[in-house]
Length: 143
Image (cartoon, rainbow, N blue to C red; front, side, top):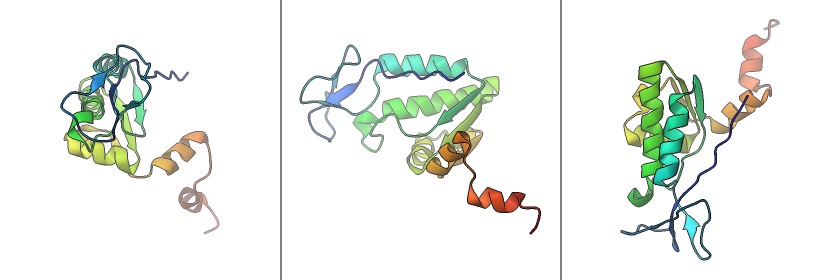
């Protein structure tokens, strides 16, 4: 069973740049002329709660524009929640993808995860059940 939880609030801005006062929506709706640049405080709480109840969590893609401090909180808090659950409850935490791996490292929590890989696309293909050439060669009994 897989459950997908979408953001319920967002810090927004009219431009793809830092601001001291982003508009934080009360719900999932983003006002005309704005763009969502991170997950908001309600979503951070929701995601942290969900992570605490998981035995496995796979993260592929940052929550927001973590490279801009104004919009890094969601990504870094999710990294922290995954790292905490890995240590406290034995969560199998898998980080896949270059941006996600970079975000986990910048948050300082990468060393507390079960597995961090820059191979995001390959990770998703493996989960999808596709054969990965590098693994096929390893399984080939004739070589």
